[in-house]
Length: 265
Image 1 (cartoon, rainbow, N blue to C red):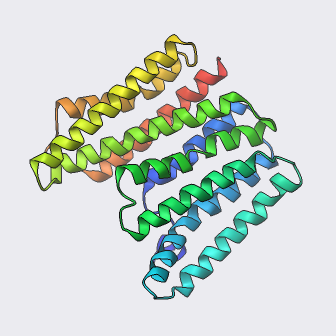
Image 2: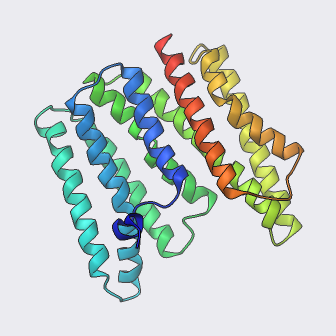
């Protein structure tokens, strides 16, 4: 049995990118690295890993089948998250992390309800998960700087907008190749086109109002380009591994240009 299976680590490579890319972006934009940031990374990582065990335990509990192994893993991961996270609040007095924790708990509770009904893979479910995972961007910025700033919220918004794009794009590719009906294909094409049209319009407005610069627009270019290309030229075949690798590459391009854009702001 693999280490991933034993520790119940998230299996989706995209989820790791959605979690760590915003964290790195927040740290790089803050331009300050310290033990506080290391503590945040460790605490947040254990919470991120704990979700898999939480889902297994919750589903088993709802079905009346105790899952002691999952419960033990959950307690260990949450305990480690608390051990590394507590000094940030009680020693470094970074009290704004508390609202982040409250929002994370609320989103996790909603996600558990969806998991119970086996619909956490819906578009809404995945967007809520992305909102939670991309909180690492403002959290890292705040912890690294030691003070709150509006840039943290912009980092959160831009990361959430970017990674939400991948939800619509991947569903577009999967359903174009494997949808059971033509109506499902048409529906996901409409939704993908609407979201990326909205995203492009939002970036134009953000740029014209001076909230972001051209480098931020470039950060989104690969995501917008691959979505519009496949909307116009739908591919009948799908290589999920290749799609996943390219998504990680695009997210690294996003990381570089978004960080660069804020460093020049």
